Image (cartoon, rainbow, N blue to C red; front, side):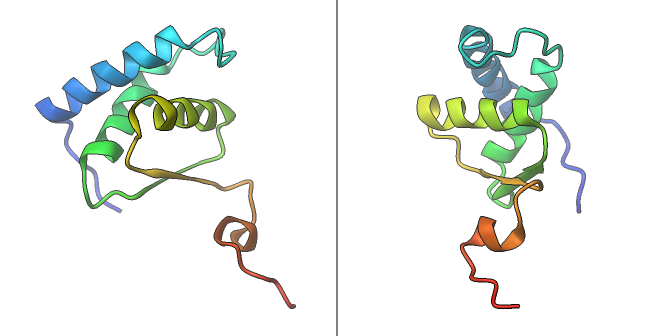
Length: 96
């Protein structure tokens, strides 16, 4: 694991993401979500940094936000939902 500094290019992308998230807030049923700026910053870093391919979460709000970002701007990272089993996530058959 590595802490990635938040740079200017991340800020620009975070602003783009935040606009989309706020515009889609009602559609996504995120009415009580106060951490949209944090979501957009983390997702911007994941989108900009080539070394980051996946974002791990169990947060249903993050999953909804990622889906809309994929639709609107083709976010370049994938989500791993830790509530989903490893086998289901990676399409593996569990013979045990």
